[in-house]
Image 1 (cartoon, rainbow, N blue to C red):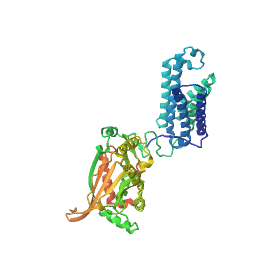
Image 2: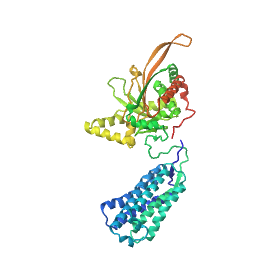
Image 3: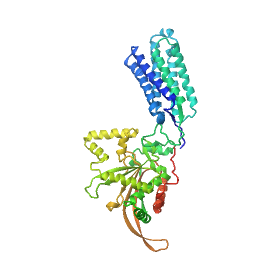
Image 4: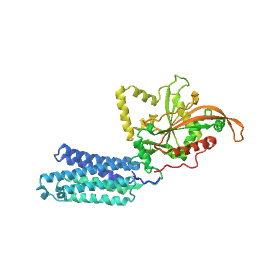
Length: 484
């Protein structure tokens, strides 16, 4: 994955100098407002807005700069809006009082013409676009960004030195833009080889930007997950799996079962075919990378009236069958031994207690937040509709696998159902009748993430692993990364 991302370190004195300059600028913006009488509209645009921008930029540099410095583009954008408002304010004042231009020094006489104001707006927009392009990795030579930011800093400093009025506001402008210049000197590239988030990424996955355009178009043609749902029915010959299970139980893994093997095989498939761990959300395809979120419904007791709850297990692409055994069993035991309801049950109970019309509005709000990737992390963690794959096993119930739909809410791209074990008499390669044991399975997928050819390759790999499950005792030799 080729990508360039930047950060500013807290160990760099320039980072702290940049933050300090922004905070001082915020104070000066407030002091400038105290010395003048202005309308509410002017106060909002020329005091509240720049103060928020300056404080926000300082906090981002100090708190989020080491990991998410790209977020500083937001206060820079609104800072450009502020400078545009200042240019328009001068134009209105000079238009109302033409004689005022003769008394002004510096370049403010230019604002008597609307075309110069428009030129200023375009220049502010260009500066913002360049800044954003750098912080999102489109441009690479940071010294050019520093040179570009030095120009408006020098112009504002000259204007401040020549000014006869509004000293606080003009000094605040110098410090705010100067803080951007200093921060650009403190910028460094990430060289750790890891992926670092940028605009468009979500908390639970990064956006794929070099994906096939057809996948992007499909998201608008088929906006709902059920519109894009494909179903694949298959069967697994489990003789090798059962021998493997007996071996693992003899080694001391007493509760080791077919679910552990199938889940381990699925995880191993993700390590070779990373597209299996994609999901579609907000009209875009995203990748979870090393986080494989496994969702499953379990009963606290094997009875018809026993309560059912959902569990979510986070796995890694390098997990072995034994790793998965310990992780899954520990989570299941924790849920079964909990005397009170799980967090999922409490959330479901809370939503169920809301009146119907209000609940419908609440769900709509949750869908909107989820669309933009703003759903709180604790809700996505509790939600059974957000994850990499959901397993359901009908084997313990003694019935065939169900053809289950995908959920339009959330981002689960795969629903995998397994049925009961059964025997089938077949002819071997020499024409002799043999009895084999099988498990039927149904794979429901979201075709907007990867196509049918990709899933066909995944199924072939899945069959290879289940025919030789001893491969799952060792981590994969190679973990393949998805596209950028």
